[in-house]
Image (cartoon, rainbow, N blue to C red; front, side):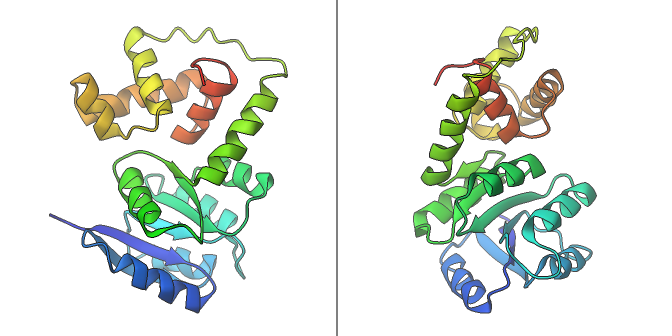
Length: 216
């Protein structure tokens, strides 16, 4: 069975070394590269294509936000998890809009890293509890504002898949529970993105909650 390949992007060597030591405890994970800033990371991508990238935010030359945007423009299927100490709503919103698949704190426990890697690799998203709390608080605040029309003409199957996506299930888990292929789920997700004018799973979930397409 092939391993999940990773790249670490962080300007602190001590932290990179510590994270490498932690990741070495996972037999299904393989580190294929590391970078100390966004520019070095983008150069690295020319020769290495990881399954997942752990990305810091504040770095010299090209920061994590800009590096994420540029990387996803070139490689739209790249999966990026932000790994940082910043809990500010502004950072979270910017990174989610940029298209990251996860957002974690650097002091996360070992089992959190395991969950994050596997969930994102199999098509899901992962956010630390603190991040989820901030996202939900923001959504509740937005619900008091004028709502966008919810008339999207979802089919029953699309509604079912949207509900499972909002529960945090990966593409494989949704496929298993609905007795269809992963490819079919990906097709339904693409249609959901089009109907809601969203670009990724995280924005789709936020849109669904904000517009009361599903219940909390």
